[in-house]
Length: 252
Figure: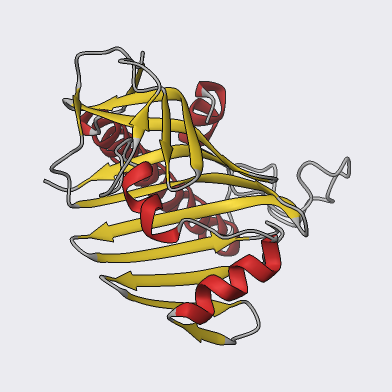
């Protein structure tokens, strides 16, 4: 939002009440009694009503401007109190999110596979062992809602069809032409290896190899004292998944 728009929005709009015939280029004929220093009762009534409307409009405009300034001040204060992540290098001294249990990451996702390709948005909400994942298309696989709680896995497609357990993995593989690391993504999104065998390419933790996947971290953010991924690319055979995290919410 530009400051010019805010200034225009805050400016009071004050319009004087028009009498009949003003501003249209016409001259009204005088009524009897005009021009002789006398004011007819009807004219006095109109003048009184005009002043009343003017005063009421002026009071309303002043109150509206005050409200707008209060709203603007509240928005600026809210923005100032929000901690914005800052971009950092992979070698930063910020600590890894090894103990983070409750968090939400949202951003963009692109998938390139044998059968389907596309891009869309995603939101991943993790609360202890419960994960709620929303994928918004078009992303090649359509809009999906995935929930994971421990070993239990469930998915609902955009047409309302529901899949449970192994059906979820089979359906994703049929759409993309390759298996999807649903269980490992919870950890990879945090810049961590999933439980099990894994290998980092070097001490910078820029490339992770695990479960047949290669995860490349090309951008990082720091939220408070945590180092969190901002961009990661997952590849396996001919399947490539690109995830750009645009927003992190970390619950203490």
